[in-house]
View 1 (cartoon, rainbow, N blue to C red):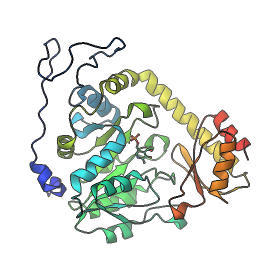
View 2 (cartoon, rainbow, N blue to C red):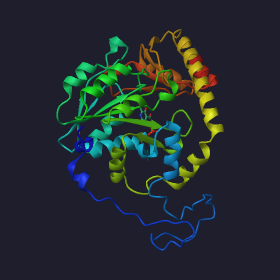
View 3 (cartoon, helix red, strand yellow):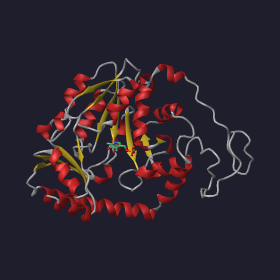
View 4 (tube, rainbow, N blue to C red):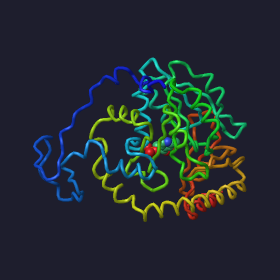
Length: 350
Ligand SMILES: Cc1ncc(COP(=O)(O)O)c(C=O)c1O
Protein backbone atom coordinates (compact mmCIF):
# COMPACT_ATOMS: atom_id res chain seq x y z
CA UNK A 1 0.00 0.00 0.00
CA UNK A 2 1.41 3.39 -0.99
CA UNK A 3 1.33 6.39 1.30
CA UNK A 4 -1.74 8.45 0.43
CA UNK A 5 -0.06 11.54 1.90
CA UNK A 6 2.44 11.43 -0.96
CA UNK A 7 -0.32 13.10 -2.96
CA UNK A 8 -0.25 16.22 -0.76
CA UNK A 9 1.86 19.24 -1.67
CA UNK A 10 5.37 18.21 -0.53
CA UNK A 11 6.22 21.60 1.00
CA UNK A 12 3.12 21.39 3.20
CA UNK A 13 4.02 17.95 4.45
CA UNK A 14 7.22 19.48 5.84
CA UNK A 15 5.58 22.59 7.30
CA UNK A 16 5.70 22.86 11.08
CA UNK A 17 2.17 23.66 12.39
CA UNK A 18 1.46 26.74 14.56
CA UNK A 19 1.73 25.95 18.23
CA UNK A 20 -1.15 27.62 20.12
CA UNK A 21 -0.97 28.80 23.75
CA UNK A 22 -2.25 26.22 26.24
CA UNK A 23 -5.60 26.37 27.97
CA UNK A 24 -6.45 24.79 31.30
CA UNK A 25 -9.69 25.61 33.01
CA UNK A 26 -9.14 27.25 36.41
CA UNK A 27 -5.69 28.64 35.50
CA UNK A 28 -5.09 32.33 34.86
CA UNK A 29 -4.43 32.88 31.19
CA UNK A 30 -1.55 35.28 30.69
CA UNK A 31 -0.31 33.45 27.62
CA UNK A 32 -2.52 34.53 24.72
CA UNK A 33 -2.83 38.33 24.84
CA UNK A 34 -6.57 38.21 25.44
CA UNK A 35 -8.79 40.51 27.51
CA UNK A 36 -9.47 39.33 31.08
CA UNK A 37 -13.08 40.65 31.01
CA UNK A 38 -16.25 39.53 29.31
CA UNK A 39 -18.59 42.01 27.63
CA UNK A 40 -21.96 42.30 29.42
CA UNK A 41 -23.97 40.42 26.78
CA UNK A 42 -21.57 37.45 26.68
CA UNK A 43 -23.61 34.39 27.66
CA UNK A 44 -21.12 31.77 26.52
CA UNK A 45 -19.70 29.21 28.88
CA UNK A 46 -16.09 29.74 27.89
CA UNK A 47 -16.20 33.52 27.58
CA UNK A 48 -15.79 35.34 24.28
CA UNK A 49 -12.84 37.24 25.69
CA UNK A 50 -10.88 34.00 25.31
CA UNK A 51 -9.95 32.41 22.03
CA UNK A 52 -11.91 29.25 21.26
CA UNK A 53 -10.03 25.96 21.71
CA UNK A 54 -7.57 25.47 18.80
CA UNK A 55 -9.68 22.47 17.74
CA UNK A 56 -13.23 21.86 19.01
CA UNK A 57 -12.58 18.41 20.49
CA UNK A 58 -15.97 17.83 22.21
CA UNK A 59 -17.63 18.71 18.92
CA UNK A 60 -15.37 16.31 17.09
CA UNK A 61 -16.40 13.58 19.53
CA UNK A 62 -20.07 14.37 19.06
CA UNK A 63 -19.83 14.27 15.27
CA UNK A 64 -17.79 11.05 15.39
CA UNK A 65 -20.57 9.42 17.39
CA UNK A 66 -23.21 10.80 15.08
CA UNK A 67 -21.50 9.55 11.93
CA UNK A 68 -20.45 6.27 13.54
CA UNK A 69 -16.67 6.64 13.15
CA UNK A 70 -13.72 7.06 15.51
CA UNK A 71 -12.80 10.62 16.52
CA UNK A 72 -9.50 10.43 14.66
CA UNK A 73 -11.44 10.22 11.40
CA UNK A 74 -13.21 13.58 11.89
CA UNK A 75 -12.08 17.11 11.10
CA UNK A 76 -14.56 19.82 12.07
CA UNK A 77 -14.66 22.65 9.53
CA UNK A 78 -16.57 25.89 9.03
CA UNK A 79 -19.18 24.33 6.80
CA UNK A 80 -18.14 21.72 4.27
CA UNK A 81 -17.24 24.69 2.07
CA UNK A 82 -14.11 25.23 4.15
CA UNK A 83 -13.22 21.55 3.73
CA UNK A 84 -13.36 21.93 -0.06
CA UNK A 85 -10.98 24.88 0.10
CA UNK A 86 -8.64 23.11 2.49
CA UNK A 87 -8.46 19.97 0.35
CA UNK A 88 -7.68 21.91 -2.80
CA UNK A 89 -5.01 24.03 -1.10
CA UNK A 90 -3.51 20.97 0.58
CA UNK A 91 -3.27 18.77 -2.47
CA UNK A 92 -3.13 20.94 -5.60
CA UNK A 93 0.06 22.87 -6.30
CA UNK A 94 -0.85 26.23 -7.85
CA UNK A 95 -0.33 26.36 -11.61
CA UNK A 96 0.51 22.67 -11.77
CA UNK A 97 -2.06 20.25 -10.38
CA UNK A 98 -5.62 19.51 -11.43
CA UNK A 99 -8.90 18.45 -9.96
CA UNK A 100 -11.84 16.86 -11.70
CA UNK A 101 -15.52 17.73 -11.41
CA UNK A 102 -18.71 16.52 -13.10
CA UNK A 103 -20.84 19.54 -13.99
CA UNK A 104 -23.48 20.62 -13.49
CA UNK A 105 -22.50 20.39 -9.83
CA UNK A 106 -21.79 22.49 -6.74
CA UNK A 107 -19.98 25.58 -7.95
CA UNK A 108 -17.57 25.94 -5.04
CA UNK A 109 -15.22 23.22 -6.37
CA UNK A 110 -14.62 25.43 -9.40
CA UNK A 111 -14.33 28.62 -7.36
CA UNK A 112 -11.77 27.29 -4.89
CA UNK A 113 -9.83 25.65 -7.73
CA UNK A 114 -9.64 29.08 -9.36
CA UNK A 115 -8.47 30.73 -6.14
CA UNK A 116 -5.70 28.13 -5.83
CA UNK A 117 -4.92 28.30 -9.57
CA UNK A 118 -5.58 24.59 -9.96
CA UNK A 119 -6.80 23.43 -13.34
CA UNK A 120 -10.34 22.01 -13.47
CA UNK A 121 -11.02 18.98 -15.67
CA UNK A 122 -14.70 18.72 -16.40
CA UNK A 123 -16.43 15.46 -17.26
CA UNK A 124 -20.09 16.44 -17.64
CA UNK A 125 -22.93 14.37 -16.22
CA UNK A 126 -24.88 12.46 -18.85
CA UNK A 127 -28.17 14.26 -19.24
CA UNK A 128 -29.64 11.48 -21.38
CA UNK A 129 -28.95 9.08 -18.51
CA UNK A 130 -30.71 11.20 -15.92
CA UNK A 131 -27.56 13.19 -15.11
CA UNK A 132 -25.56 10.08 -14.15
CA UNK A 133 -21.77 10.31 -13.97
CA UNK A 134 -19.65 8.87 -16.75
CA UNK A 135 -17.14 6.67 -14.88
CA UNK A 136 -15.15 5.55 -17.90
CA UNK A 137 -14.65 9.10 -19.20
CA UNK A 138 -13.64 10.21 -15.70
CA UNK A 139 -10.93 7.56 -15.58
CA UNK A 140 -9.79 8.44 -19.11
CA UNK A 141 -9.40 12.11 -18.16
CA UNK A 142 -7.39 11.57 -14.95
CA UNK A 143 -3.68 12.34 -15.35
CA UNK A 144 -0.70 12.14 -13.01
CA UNK A 145 -1.42 15.73 -12.02
CA UNK A 146 -5.07 15.09 -11.08
CA UNK A 147 -5.05 15.17 -7.29
CA UNK A 148 -8.76 15.20 -6.46
CA UNK A 149 -11.99 13.95 -8.02
CA UNK A 150 -15.04 15.69 -6.52
CA UNK A 151 -18.26 13.68 -6.68
CA UNK A 152 -21.45 15.06 -5.17
CA UNK A 153 -24.20 12.64 -4.17
CA UNK A 154 -27.06 13.53 -4.11
CA UNK A 155 -25.81 16.08 -6.59
CA UNK A 156 -26.51 19.79 -6.36
CA UNK A 157 -28.32 21.01 -8.50
CA UNK A 158 -29.54 17.90 -10.36
CA UNK A 159 -30.76 16.09 -7.22
CA UNK A 160 -29.82 12.51 -8.04
CA UNK A 161 -27.53 10.15 -6.15
CA UNK A 162 -24.61 8.45 -7.82
CA UNK A 163 -24.66 4.67 -8.24
CA UNK A 164 -22.56 2.93 -5.63
CA UNK A 165 -20.93 0.69 -8.24
CA UNK A 166 -19.91 3.67 -10.40
CA UNK A 167 -18.19 5.34 -7.46
CA UNK A 168 -16.49 2.15 -6.36
CA UNK A 169 -15.15 1.59 -9.87
CA UNK A 170 -13.56 5.06 -9.75
CA UNK A 171 -12.21 4.72 -6.19
CA UNK A 172 -10.63 1.40 -7.01
CA UNK A 173 -9.15 2.47 -10.33
CA UNK A 174 -7.47 5.63 -9.03
CA UNK A 175 -6.32 4.17 -5.69
CA UNK A 176 -2.94 5.62 -4.63
CA UNK A 177 -3.08 8.15 -7.49
CA UNK A 178 -5.99 10.49 -6.75
CA UNK A 179 -8.22 11.41 -3.84
CA UNK A 180 -11.93 10.85 -4.31
CA UNK A 181 -13.98 13.36 -2.32
CA UNK A 182 -17.61 12.34 -1.87
CA UNK A 183 -19.72 15.35 -1.00
CA UNK A 184 -22.71 14.03 0.95
CA UNK A 185 -24.26 17.38 1.93
CA UNK A 186 -27.79 16.13 1.10
CA UNK A 187 -27.40 12.50 2.17
CA UNK A 188 -30.05 12.68 4.90
CA UNK A 189 -32.76 13.34 2.32
CA UNK A 190 -31.90 10.24 0.29
CA UNK A 191 -33.19 6.68 0.65
CA UNK A 192 -29.93 5.34 -0.72
CA UNK A 193 -26.99 4.24 1.40
CA UNK A 194 -24.21 6.69 2.21
CA UNK A 195 -20.65 5.92 1.10
CA UNK A 196 -19.20 5.00 4.50
CA UNK A 197 -18.35 1.50 3.25
CA UNK A 198 -16.18 2.96 0.47
CA UNK A 199 -14.47 5.40 2.82
CA UNK A 200 -13.61 2.47 5.11
CA UNK A 201 -12.37 0.30 2.27
CA UNK A 202 -10.26 2.81 0.30
CA UNK A 203 -7.81 5.17 1.96
CA UNK A 204 -8.02 7.63 -0.95
CA UNK A 205 -11.73 8.22 -0.25
CA UNK A 206 -12.98 11.13 1.88
CA UNK A 207 -16.54 12.11 2.75
CA UNK A 208 -17.89 15.61 3.41
CA UNK A 209 -20.88 16.09 5.69
CA UNK A 210 -22.64 19.21 6.94
CA UNK A 211 -25.11 20.36 9.57
CA UNK A 212 -26.39 23.03 7.18
CA UNK A 213 -29.16 21.03 5.58
CA UNK A 214 -30.93 18.34 7.58
CA UNK A 215 -30.71 19.77 11.10
CA UNK A 216 -31.49 23.43 10.48
CA UNK A 217 -28.04 24.75 11.46
CA UNK A 218 -26.80 26.50 8.30
CA UNK A 219 -26.11 29.58 10.42
CA UNK A 220 -23.55 27.95 12.72
CA UNK A 221 -21.31 26.86 9.79
CA UNK A 222 -20.43 23.35 10.87
CA UNK A 223 -19.17 20.69 8.50
CA UNK A 224 -17.01 17.61 8.81
CA UNK A 225 -14.45 15.73 6.78
CA UNK A 226 -14.53 11.98 7.40
CA UNK A 227 -11.38 10.21 6.29
CA UNK A 228 -8.38 8.13 7.18
CA UNK A 229 -6.71 9.62 10.35
CA UNK A 230 -3.46 10.50 8.55
CA UNK A 231 -5.38 12.58 6.03
CA UNK A 232 -7.30 14.24 8.86
CA UNK A 233 -4.05 15.06 10.70
CA UNK A 234 -2.56 16.54 7.55
CA UNK A 235 -5.62 18.70 6.83
CA UNK A 236 -5.70 19.76 10.47
CA UNK A 237 -2.06 20.85 10.24
CA UNK A 238 -2.91 23.41 7.55
CA UNK A 239 -6.16 24.62 9.11
CA UNK A 240 -5.49 27.67 11.29
CA UNK A 241 -6.06 27.22 15.03
CA UNK A 242 -9.08 28.97 16.61
CA UNK A 243 -10.97 28.92 13.31
CA UNK A 244 -14.14 27.46 14.77
CA UNK A 245 -15.82 30.13 16.94
CA UNK A 246 -16.92 29.57 20.54
CA UNK A 247 -20.64 30.43 19.99
CA UNK A 248 -20.84 27.86 17.17
CA UNK A 249 -19.15 25.17 19.28
CA UNK A 250 -21.39 25.73 22.27
CA UNK A 251 -24.49 26.04 20.15
CA UNK A 252 -23.92 22.78 18.29
CA UNK A 253 -23.09 20.94 21.50
CA UNK A 254 -26.36 22.20 22.97
CA UNK A 255 -28.49 21.88 19.84
CA UNK A 256 -27.39 18.41 18.86
CA UNK A 257 -29.31 16.53 21.50
CA UNK A 258 -31.64 13.58 21.02
CA UNK A 259 -34.68 15.80 20.89
CA UNK A 260 -33.30 18.05 18.11
CA UNK A 261 -32.14 15.03 16.17
CA UNK A 262 -35.59 13.47 16.43
CA UNK A 263 -37.17 16.72 15.27
CA UNK A 264 -34.58 16.90 12.47
CA UNK A 265 -35.43 13.38 11.35
CA UNK A 266 -39.16 14.09 11.45
CA UNK A 267 -38.65 17.19 9.34
CA UNK A 268 -36.61 15.23 6.83
CA UNK A 269 -39.61 12.89 6.49
CA UNK A 270 -41.96 15.85 6.07
CA UNK A 271 -39.73 17.31 3.37
CA UNK A 272 -39.52 13.98 1.55
CA UNK A 273 -43.30 13.72 1.45
CA UNK A 274 -43.51 17.36 0.43
CA UNK A 275 -40.93 16.75 -2.30
CA UNK A 276 -43.09 14.06 -3.88
CA UNK A 277 -46.16 16.29 -3.65
CA UNK A 278 -44.39 19.36 -5.07
CA UNK A 279 -42.96 17.28 -7.90
CA UNK A 280 -46.43 16.07 -8.85
CA UNK A 281 -47.87 19.59 -8.67
CA UNK A 282 -45.03 21.10 -10.69
CA UNK A 283 -45.69 18.65 -13.48
CA UNK A 284 -49.07 20.35 -13.94
CA UNK A 285 -47.52 23.80 -14.35
CA UNK A 286 -47.57 24.75 -18.02
CA UNK A 287 -44.17 26.55 -17.89
CA UNK A 288 -42.56 23.33 -16.64
CA UNK A 289 -41.22 20.93 -19.23
CA UNK A 290 -39.66 18.29 -17.01
CA UNK A 291 -39.23 17.61 -13.29
CA UNK A 292 -36.21 15.48 -12.44
CA UNK A 293 -36.30 12.89 -9.67
CA UNK A 294 -34.60 14.10 -6.49
CA UNK A 295 -32.90 12.52 -3.47
CA UNK A 296 -32.24 15.96 -1.94
CA UNK A 297 -34.22 18.82 -0.34
CA UNK A 298 -34.66 20.56 -3.68
CA UNK A 299 -36.14 19.80 -7.09
CA UNK A 300 -34.45 20.41 -10.42
CA UNK A 301 -36.88 21.57 -13.08
CA UNK A 302 -36.59 22.23 -16.78
CA UNK A 303 -38.81 25.15 -17.76
CA UNK A 304 -39.71 26.78 -21.06
CA UNK A 305 -37.92 29.94 -19.88
CA UNK A 306 -36.03 30.05 -16.57
CA UNK A 307 -35.88 33.83 -16.40
CA UNK A 308 -39.64 34.15 -16.82
CA UNK A 309 -40.24 31.38 -14.31
CA UNK A 310 -38.05 33.12 -11.77
CA UNK A 311 -39.76 36.44 -12.40
CA UNK A 312 -43.24 34.94 -11.99
CA UNK A 313 -42.18 33.36 -8.69
CA UNK A 314 -40.64 36.67 -7.61
CA UNK A 315 -43.96 38.43 -8.20
CA UNK A 316 -45.40 36.07 -5.59
CA UNK A 317 -42.52 36.86 -3.20
CA UNK A 318 -40.79 33.53 -3.75
CA UNK A 319 -37.12 33.17 -4.70
CA UNK A 320 -35.94 30.25 -6.80
CA UNK A 321 -32.49 29.53 -8.19
CA UNK A 322 -31.53 29.88 -11.86
CA UNK A 323 -28.16 29.36 -13.54
CA UNK A 324 -27.61 32.26 -15.95
CA UNK A 325 -23.83 31.66 -16.05
CA UNK A 326 -24.14 28.05 -17.19
CA UNK A 327 -25.35 27.82 -20.80
CA UNK A 328 -26.20 24.11 -20.42
CA UNK A 329 -28.62 25.00 -17.63
CA UNK A 330 -30.16 27.98 -19.38
CA UNK A 331 -33.74 26.89 -18.79
CA UNK A 332 -33.30 25.00 -15.55
CA UNK A 333 -34.54 26.12 -12.16
CA UNK A 334 -33.69 24.69 -8.75
CA UNK A 335 -36.47 24.87 -6.18
CA UNK A 336 -35.83 24.17 -2.51
CA UNK A 337 -38.63 22.10 -0.98
CA UNK A 338 -40.30 24.27 1.64
CA UNK A 339 -43.25 23.88 3.98
CA UNK A 340 -46.62 23.25 2.35
CA UNK A 341 -47.55 26.93 2.67
CA UNK A 342 -44.27 28.00 1.01
CA UNK A 343 -44.67 25.51 -1.82
CA UNK A 344 -48.28 26.56 -2.31
CA UNK A 345 -47.23 30.17 -2.56
CA UNK A 346 -44.92 29.23 -5.41
CA UNK A 347 -47.50 27.08 -7.18
CA UNK A 348 -50.19 29.73 -6.91
CA UNK A 349 -47.98 32.13 -8.86
CA UNK A 350 -48.45 30.01 -11.98
C1 LIG B 1 -23.14 19.91 -2.55
C2 LIG B 1 -22.83 20.88 -1.49
N1 LIG B 1 -21.73 20.72 -0.76
C3 LIG B 1 -21.39 21.58 0.21
C4 LIG B 1 -22.19 22.66 0.50
C5 LIG B 1 -21.71 23.61 1.53
O1 LIG B 1 -22.41 23.53 2.67
P1 LIG B 1 -21.87 24.16 4.03
O2 LIG B 1 -20.64 24.94 3.75
O3 LIG B 1 -22.98 24.98 4.52
O4 LIG B 1 -21.59 22.97 4.89
C6 LIG B 1 -23.36 22.87 -0.23
C7 LIG B 1 -24.21 24.03 0.05
O5 LIG B 1 -25.14 24.36 -0.59
C8 LIG B 1 -23.68 21.97 -1.26
O6 LIG B 1 -24.76 22.13 -2.01
